[in-house]
Amino acid sequence: MAKQRKKLLIIDGYNVLRSGSRYRLIVGPDYTHDAFNRAREALINDVVSYAGRDTRAVIVFDGADNAFSTGEPDVIGGVRIMFSPAGQSADKVIEKLAYDARMRGVETMVVTSDATIQDTVFGGGVDRMSANGFSREVEMLVEEVRQDDSPAISVKNTVAERLSPAVRAKLAALRDGKQ
Image (cartoon, rainbow, N blue to C red; front, side):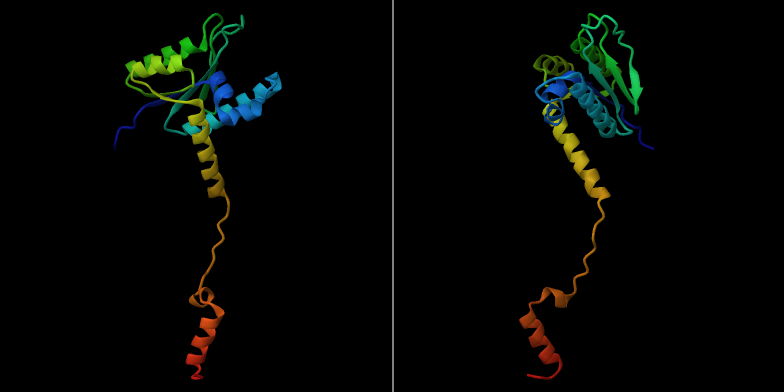
């Protein structure tokens, strides 16, 4: 049996919510708590579906300005959700997670549109995907699932159905001996 490759997907949470086309529509222009909560929930659900069973996933949100943020992760649907600890940016947490994963030989992908993070992690041999790239990937996944769930109508085409009425009449006349 082939050895299964280890994979890790790291999502820059707030960056994807602000930069990913799929989530900007949910957040809208007002940036209210309710809108961000809905967008966060959509992102978590999308990452659960996207990662599937063969990829571990972590979504990191910035909690640097929250004095109560400990950096302890929660797990939802197999995806670790974490806010960076108070006083530490999500960027630093993401860079450390990516570096540690690469040192353990884990195939790692970081999803962010932050150029600094992209440059830092790419220099360490980690793959990267933009927030919009992730949004497009999720949209394609959602469309595939939608198409799989919609019942296909089986159309039975006979040769007669594909012929024009004039040709069918001529063939019927030949068959019946009426030339």
